[in-house]
Length: 216
Image 1 (tube, rainbow, N blue to C red):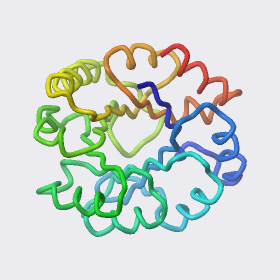
Image 2: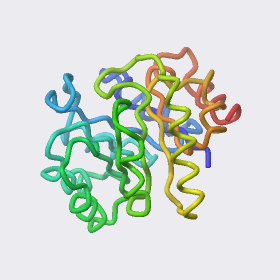
Image 3: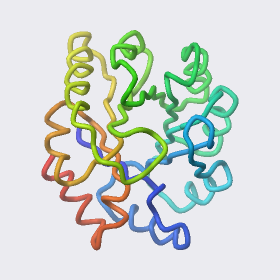
């Protein structure tokens, strides 16, 4: 599977409707929604008030990535606000299973995420309990960072585990993704690529999205 999920965090919020219409026209598969609380990560992005216009104007599924503490307090509200999938960080919780159950009970897809400094093996016990794992290829909280090359080995490791157990679990990659490394990422075993500045800061965002899918 080769899916592209542009990150709305890099969009022009003064012309958000225009950027969402571009996503609708493009070959993008999902819209990635980064939610930051200023505690788990040092930046603050947005919350429920922006979910409504995004759901209203965007025809693509909303892939919500919670970079927050206490995600158990908010996952149901994000589901109700129109999220198609909701992911949270493994390192932000003591036990992810009850939170995953809250998301599943809403009929929304589940995702478990880790930062680059978290041992990828910690995801293994949950591979059969989530729809997707998200490997951060930069540290969560800032856009425009350079891709961390060691991510490739993590992708291959998780992909091998998924194949060995014959699971449908998807692998999503977020951070420093662009048209230059999309083919290598897909070849390593990634299924979904999140791209922010590479898409929204491009002269022709739709062409960048198309190129990433084709070269992949």
